[in-house]
Length: 168
Image (cartoon, rainbow, N blue to C red; front, side, top):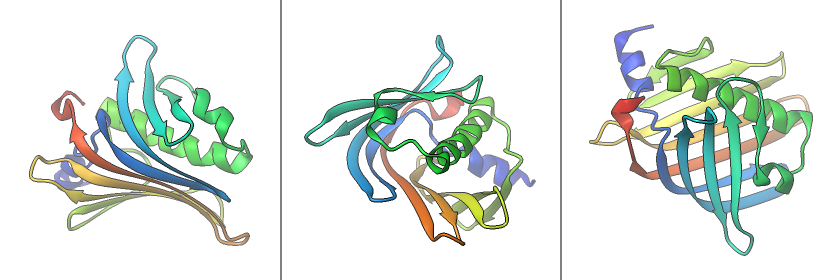
């Protein structure tokens, strides 16, 4: 991988806040979010403020393949949602360690695209786009797609504040 790709990957701000939306099958949620790395518990924590429902928490472990928190009880747990979050978790662990993931990674202008092919019909793609003057990506789109069943899931996060970009 080129230095440009490594530098671009470092622009993925894990400790941030902003707005987002998630579509998991027929479930659609919009939210404000705040994300951080909890160094004590070694979790990537996302607090989602859902209109009407209030705050829900999503914890992605940085040391094992474990996803927990109140948001996991709100959404339907399927093998597909597990795969969706596990790939995101794997990329977050790589970013937190400051190493490039083993997935396919491509830099296209101000977009960085990571792709993990799960099977002949399944893939998860993370597109980091809209690199700001402060050197972080203002938008991330995580998409799961199963071409044979037409199943798709999407998580979009629009970052309005990045904290601690250099610390990662």
